[in-house]
Amino acid sequence: MRVDTVYENARFLTGTKESVALAALNGRIVALGHDAAALSAKRRVDLGGSVVVPGFHDAHNHMAWFGMALDDVALSECRGVDEVYDAVARRAAETPPGGWIIGSGYDQNKLVGGHPTRQGLDRAAPGHLVRLKHTSGHMTVVNSAVLERLDLRNVPVGGDVVRDEDGSPTGLLREQAQLMLRPLTYPTPVERVVRGLDRASERYLAEGITSVQEAGIGGGLVGETPAELAAYQLARERGVLRVRSTVMVAASVLHDLDAGARSEARFPAEEPSALYGLDLGMRTGFGDEWLRIGAMKLFADGSLIGRTCAMHEPFEGEPDNVGYFQVPEDEIARTIAAAHKAGWQIATHAIGDRAITVVLDAYEAALKADPRRDHRHRIEHCAVLRPEELKRLASLGLIASPQGRFVNEIGDGMRAALGPGREPWCYRLKSLLDAGCVLPASSDRPVVEGAPLLALADMVRRKTASGVVLGPDERLTPAEALRAYTYGSAYAAFAEKDLGTLEIGKLADFAVLSADPTDESTLDSIHVVATAVGGDIVYERS
Ligand SMILES: [Zn+2]
Image (cartoon, rainbow, N blue to C red; front, side, top):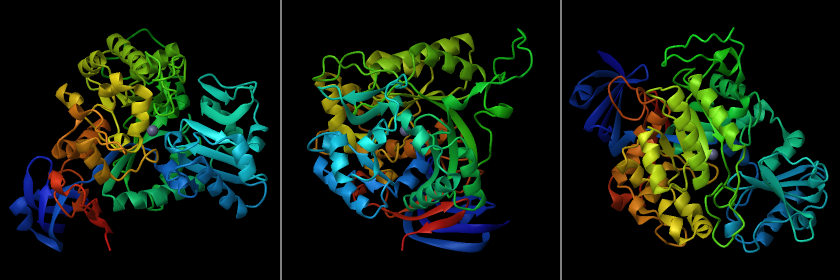
């Protein structure tokens, strides 16, 4: 057999055993080890003694949002609210009057002065429309010019307009209240989304990421346009969708389908009835190895650092605030039941412990009514997980999808919101593995930095920015962290037959690293040397 490429002179950490060479043909791995080294090939690539791992798979990211936000006023480094206003004023000076100024990435926990206000933005950019997005995506501050264009008497359920003591709006719109901005900005032109995917995925390759799951397209708070799948398809046709993408679909886009009379004759349990879903009956799994429809994405509640997520007990220091749900509890249960029955995988955003309880109840009821063996339903973030709920999650065969990097970048804000008593329940990792769950890994980019090598170190150390170890019992070994960012994430996308480990028959997607990521001592200095997708090197560090 003559193959396309033999990669050699590296340590291949395949996910099952170590190997000395890898042979690729038509995009897939056809041989490993000495068998691979002995093959004749069109091309032989000497990897110079580096370490190769399966390509990183980000199980929850927002690639379009991240790519487009590269044009926004960057606020994540600001440490005071005046710095935010200065940045807005600088952008205003170069923006035609009346135009939009969009900023993103601020976190009030890191800002002296807290959330920016409408009045401050009015001073910084008196002649513009200003919108600053919180790093969580769960809230936005706007200036008076934007506020005047909104119908504040009709705030959507599951959101609120924050007001100061004398009752006037501060400019802060939380959760579903952000949907009031939709008529001013939505839908995003498809070409802008394509450009965002292009820029984002180029960055991803440089970080060793070869596949991702996009956590919600087409609607809801994170969707950019109802034609979002068209943007992905266009990006792929033009060769600028550089990472394999599984796209979750916003729950608001699913609907009842007219699939004929609803007979009482039951479909076999494993065969979905497809009465609820996308037009044409498309559902989870449709597509190919480059672009596939993933889970239905549903939002149960909000943000922990923004203190809007639904809690059993009040946030620390705020005895009247237990957060709230984004949609009514009974609607969460109904949506989950319908999507489950129709054969969808479901990924529900639930952060507060009360939201997690409600979502577990809904999954439990749906599974009882319509048992399905390999459902792989997920709880995104799963941020405040009580011990009894962890047991229930594991026994239902659910997948928790936490973000390892959060502890580093927003961990101090999370500790402040929870207080010491609930800290051990925060963004659990190790106890999920101990309970027998498959653990995926992800960034939620652009909420925090998305480079997997940063996250691996955070999953092992769990240090907040101020240096506190948050949940020392939840630290992973470097090997466990690597497995989560490769195999665990692929499993959470039903893609482990193609991705997640380097085995014969799987896609030849891998990252070439400067050192061994399972060696804790190198985690601070390690970098990506090259990245391969489908057997071809698509990124090389210059
Ligand atoms: Zn997200």
